[in-house]
Length: 183
Ligand code: GDP
Ligand code: MG
Image (tube, rainbow, N blue to C red):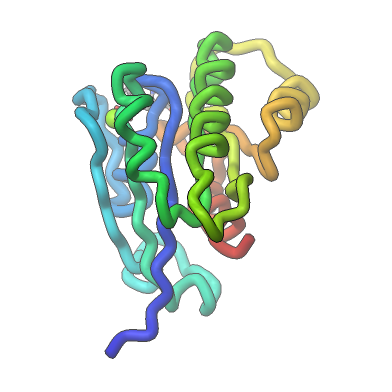
């Protein structure tokens, strides 16, 4: 019998912002230039203790993390609600080089908070807003980003590039997951 805790993490945001890249990085340490649309929901489970690139703290290492990569297309907004049940936290992604992706990301989060009205759940999930693609040109200050995250009711935010790992830092994405599942 396994006593591993399982954490269900929803990964949401508009199309093309980097959700699949983030899931691939966290679970396989892989970045691909190739773009494949996620149809519906992709699901990956990994054990942090198996991760060679990062040493997770013991409590996190002793868990299993499920990443639910929800297709960012609007047509899925209705059906993905069924996947929200039992979710522990929410990793919301947007593209810092496309400011119109911020509102879309916030809308995904709002949908999740509103869709989780089943008994026993609190209405707000711990959530992190990740401004991805900082390797591309953009003109937002950290104060701007903090305000966007605050207005969107996020508990945390950070920025970086899953492509270059610049600003994200070597451990940024891992630290974000750790922060989220410890909430
Ligand atoms: P998704 O639709 O949200 O799942 O997005 P993907 O992860 O499939 O990424 C969409 C495209 O953006 C792909 O061509 C990726 O290689 C690219 N991409 C992802 N992250 C970054 C990043 O941080 N910087 C840059 N420049 N491109 C990225
Ligand atoms: Mg995808």
